Length: 229
Image (tube, rainbow, N blue to C red; front, top):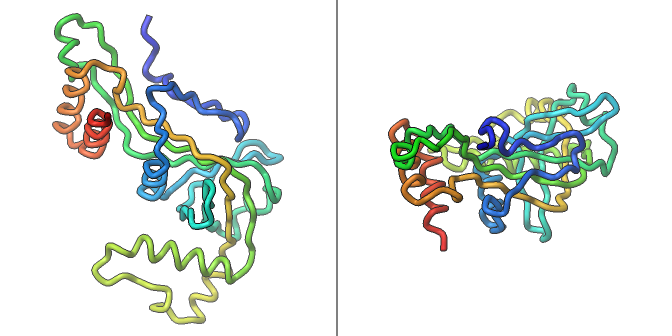
């Protein structure tokens, strides 16, 4: 009996250190590709385990790999957000970054027309970043994180906004309302479920189907995966 598509790939989150279900054919080992997915999809879901249970916060992260190793994730949270006081320095955490994703109809598979032995599925890219969390409640660190995030995300603007555009007293006041977060990474794992295990004609049919409904990013990711040696 075929596995239900709505259960595939679900990750057990009862502990932040638990592993993602990761069949070999969906594993992405290339470090540069993991970094690309994180940088292209900067809004990560920070999963922590506190005294009140599992918590999830959605934050824009900056990936810094200049120090070697797996790298560091930098972010900030509102001072009013209790998460920075609920975690302990060095707690194990996970940050989830989701890339392209979308529904795949069995009607797109040529093989379905021949045997009708096809089922729906969901294709996606996801990176799980594992590490330890460290709260950085100091103005210099926070200012640096905000500045770097701003430069990264304003880079494609015709006239990029910069922190110096705002009055210095206003910016200083705004910085007082946020707290810095540093996550020192121990490992990154990536799952790219993109029909790699399907026959070529079905994979190409799914790509055409995605293009027809405007899911060009997912279609391109599937095409790139199909062209890999």
